Image (tube, rainbow, N blue to C red):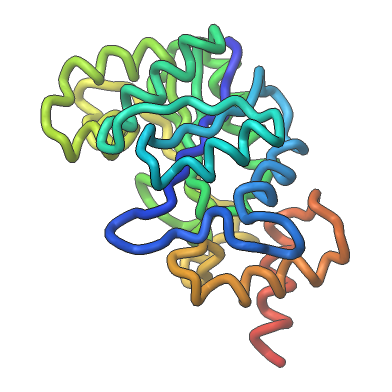
Length: 232
C-alpha cells in the first residue's frame, strides 16, 4: 500500500492567525515541517492541502516555489481535499498532519506508514489521538483511502467534514482502528510542542536552534532540549 503524507495548512483557523508561514529558525514554519518529513520513510509523497480562498494564496505560492504538491478546496471540506489528494497521487493510504506541528517526529510518521502497509487494508485507522499520551504536537492520523472514501458518504455535517479522520477514530463500531501507545520515555502529554498561537514561536524556535541546523532529531532529543530550555 502506497501512503501519502497530507499536511493541512491554513492562514487563519478558529478565527486567529496560525503562523504556518511565520519565520522559524530561518525558514517558514511550513518549510520546517517539510524538512522534517523529508526524513520519513515509506511515503509515496507529501502534499499540502489548503483552501482555495484568497487569504491562503501565500500558502499556495510557497508550495509552488518549493515544488511541493498543493491540493486546494473548500475551507470546511478537509475530508474532500484529503480524498482528492490521495486520488491525485494514486495513494491507497494517507497520513493526516497539521502544519502547526513542525516538530513532528519523522520516525512516528514512518511507523504509521509502515503499519498501514503491513496491515494492507485490514485496519481502517492507525494513530495516536484516541488516547493522547504523546506530547502535544505529535498528533498523527493514518487511514486507508477506502475507509476515508466510505466515511465521506456518512459525513453530512460541516463539523464532520472539517475534522475528517476524526470520524474514523470516533466510530469504532463501523471502522477498525489501532491506537498507538507512547513508549514510556516519550509519554509526556504535559509537554506542548505545537504552535497554537504566534506566542508559541519563540519556544519552538529555541528548540530548533538547539540542534544547530539538524532536522533529523528524534522526539526523545526534542524532549531533552525542551527540558533543558525550561530549566534555564
